[in-house]
Length: 150
Image 1 (tube, helix red, strand yellow):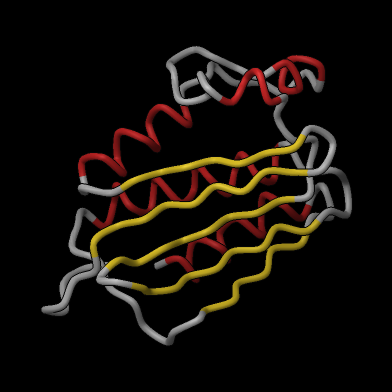
Image 2 (cartoon, rainbow, N blue to C red):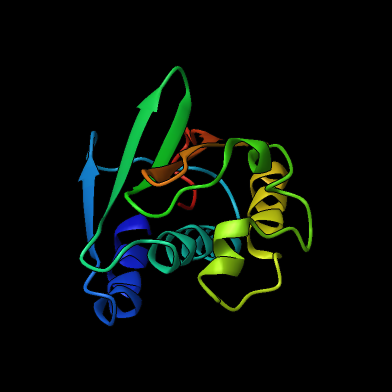
């Protein structure tokens, strides 16, 4: 699914000449969950990464597994988020100063939605960012040991 979503996001990224690369640490990781909501989660993360990337930037997506958990990491080399704004970034209607400065449209609902989807799947979402350097979002979900949906 992550590979397919990356392909979909490349269409969005094309207009900004932003590249998206997918590096799988393992060939086929599975999580149990709602495929439509998980797809929505990864689209939100990739859309944000494209939206706030500089022209000709690169977005790196990685998938791995460790200690019974599947991790999906989305890293961009975009405008980043100021340290003081990171704490409330998952609150509804909250948008970073860089988003406003870039005149990017949005209501500030994407990341709160992403967090709700992750938490509904008993997972965790974390974000690290440096203003002017980029942002990394890490989603950790329980691995499906019985071969469910991913």
